[in-house]
Image (tube, rainbow, N blue to C red; front, side):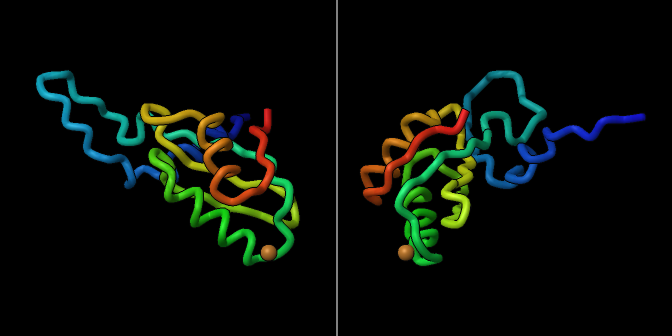
Length: 106
Ligand SMILES: [Cu+2]
């Protein structure tokens, strides 16, 4: 019996990997080396318009590659480049941009 690897989620954004042209270094074979996904809890979203606003705000943050939000769940799923930023920094930036209370889900 084989277990399904949840790692597949990290592969979703494979095409987004920005060309970080570091001269002379060995070539990485993984296209999405620094791409990771995390979930934040978001308080204050009440409709799909809030979801859209949060997604737009999140994608403006440097290092954020994709964002999904659910006002029903009160969460957002953020895809980001771990070489550029951190979940804590993104959650804080989203809170500042949107006014929603955010917290990185552990
Ligand atoms: Cu709303």
